[in-house]
Amino acid sequence: MLMLLVSSVLMFFSGLIVFSSSRKHLLLMLLSLEFIVLSLYLNIFIYLSLNDYNYFFSMIFITMSVCEGALGLSVLVSMIRSWGNDYILTFSSLW
Image 1 (spheres, rainbow, N blue to C red):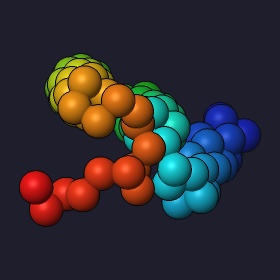
Image 2 (spheres, helix red, strand yellow):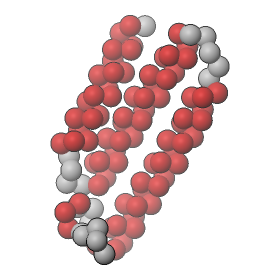
Image 3 (spheres, rainbow, N blue to C red):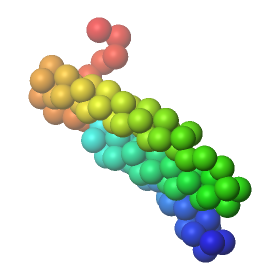
Image 4 (tube, helix red, strand yellow):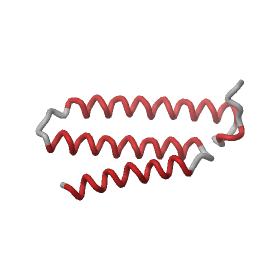
């Protein structure tokens, strides 16, 4: 169980490294954010299973993360329709 916990923490930090290093495309940033959310879900699931708690909070968390992913994809589609690509530096957020 300790190995699973260490691997989920390693997943979280590798997602943070990818998120901070790939600031060129919005799609890569969204994928790394989803990877971070999945590692947090794994951490919550491990914590709840070790302490014999109910898994209701994990279902709320996964529902909110799905909503966050849908919102990110809608922003990506809107950005591609407006500017033609998903490069972060090609658009000005002051418009």
